[in-house]
Image 1 (cartoon, rainbow, N blue to C red):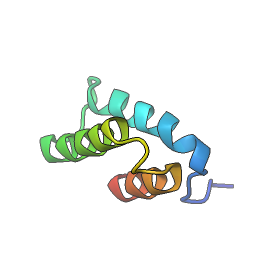
Image 2 (cartoon, helix red, strand yellow):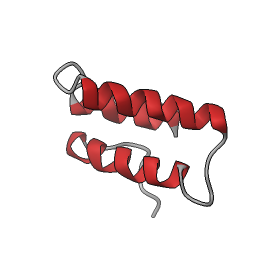
Image 3 (cartoon, one colour):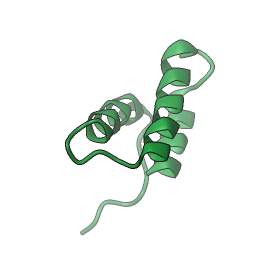
Image 4 (cartoon, one colour):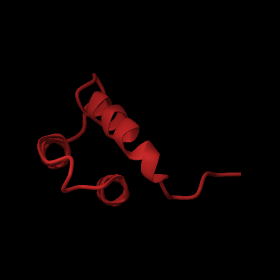
Amino acid sequence: MPRPRALQDAEAPLWLAVLLDYTFSDKNAQRAARLDLLGIAHDATAYPDDIPHWRLAELLLRWA
């Protein structure tokens, strides 16, 4: 059975790391997608109190 397209709040930081690793691997994403993900990562790390995990999960799902 496929996993539903959702993230648990606590999984969001882990998925951010996984997606960043993927975009900068040999199978890297397109430049625009990479820049969008970097923007999300910057905001999540520079302003951690302003982006709760549920919001980060929303942003990552939208990006994916």
